[in-house]
Length: 323
Image 1 (cartoon, helix red, strand yellow):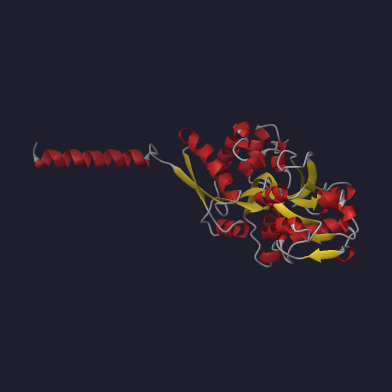
Image 2: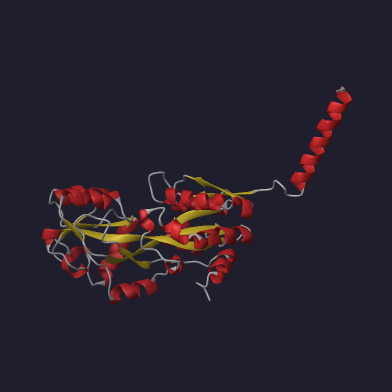
């Protein structure tokens, strides 16, 4: 074959390939979900969503990848910068980012939109069974670790105690160490109980239950109903009685939600496709991580502290979950 024929065929192939690409035959849209550290719950959550999306890529034309990040604050800031399409963040962080409060004071991210609130990160009050603590009111005169000042756990447990008319001064002893210290302090009888905000099940409470007889205290009642109304980023949830050794009951509580967020700049069709994929395969999705055990399609709307993206709204309405 002459060089002219070879060059002609090569040129022809290049032209055809260019035409196919320009007409979208090989077009694909790439999206990235920002999560958290690889050992946390955000990373496998993002991975689960991407796996489901990638199974549908022939139909949607969307390829999804997951990125390990610094977590909530990093994700919303990077979405603002246009370097992430989606991210997972705590509902209180989402609220503060949109409204320019807390760490986002005078730096509000008005283009931020919620997609769904995936699972609860619930406040747990872990106590020794022999401590005689059956309710929040029983904390009076007890030794409790309330976590370090400025932490999410500390902010939440103080709000909860105040709702029940309790203050730090009402405790016999208020330790102010990280919740990671809780299991050891409980085992060594240095405290009667400790607070922690976790995605459940968590190794923290499992460690405690493996070394001492523990119980979880219900955080519910009228004061909690009023808190949920007052703070839009809080939501009720239940810690399953199957999660921890020695705890033979479901435990109602309050906490933030792990919220999937995006931006107004992300195409409505993309957000719709992602939301629809999760809703259409919800039973399979629930099996992908123990933290999803108690969630329902309806609970995906609980704890949304900012407006939903129109693409997500469309998918939820089609599923009959939103009116």
